[in-house]
Image (cartoon, rainbow over all chains, first blue to last red; front, side, top):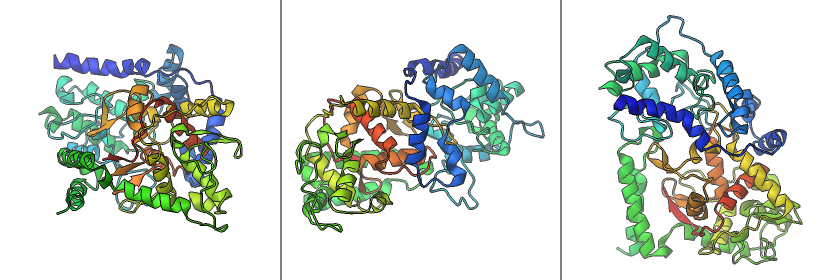
Length: 207
Length: 278
């Protein structure tokens, strides 16, 4: 039952998109880009890329996060190519560090500079239920309770979780989740830690 | 203890309970929410104890005080219903202003008046316009708060039927869904569905008229966690901060377009500013 509800949750990610689909924009995207540029006049040079969407985000915005089949496939292929894998071939790091980064929302806001010795967080709890112990969790993403247990702790599932955390658009184009690896929000090592939180048999996620 | 002193005690308790760092927020949130709920209840019993009204009073005095290089008051400022007409003006904003040849929201219209009538420098008016946590809302925000209270109880009724108004509305709708930045966020990441939360904080579905009508009229609002009034321009600035975007300029075309889109969605919703927010 739980497994079914989880799979249902996964299917929901794909299904949510049509539910919130907006009408395809009739406004000239170049005009919008210019408006955004002038709305953030104090943005330093190295922040300029933040103002413009890449091709994938352009397509997601244009189709209200519900792209037609051909665009869907093009995004999958493009985003899959961004995924870099751990050099040691292992997908599980230290789940305790994963729990810490799941709690932390630090990083990349204009008040987070200079970051000093603080590292970026994944802020996973902002959107996901993850452990029973943490009751302050958001509901934009599906619950991840018993994530590894439901998948019998399979190695292939650990790899899939790594890929999803690195870049979810490779499997679910126009998902709301940040591309943590592809956008360099988290390091490969941190993504392994997040995967360990989900997939380690001794992680509180699976207790 | 007078009711007002009692209120301050509850307020201080609520503020202490608000975790300074969101990531370590947990069960404390429930206690915080309870304390704020008690506070809201006390405000209902005595609406004049809303601290945001002190800022509205300050705003009323600022409106009538000769200021700026030209040493004139804002009493000839036209908020859309004629020079000096404040009652009900906020309920019909944003709107197209022929003198500016632009659609303006309340705050950008005030900037326009402060610049043209009082002679303030535009750059100075939009430089660091929002208060830090614990600091009172700045002068522009105080005036905006007062003007909003002068539409309290009315319903949003911006006409938005002029060509430039329609254009601004379409731009706002497009901005609302536009994703960019290192997290790929758009307004729709958080506000395109009902019943979603970030941690324990509920998120209004702002494209839905039903939900927009409930919340848009609450701004400018008094925020318990930061102990000051936060205006709608400040609210958007804070959204973009969280979206990992740079600092949104007050009165930028994008900010006005987004506010126009939100107010249009909230059309018919009651104005209750300044409301009390977390």
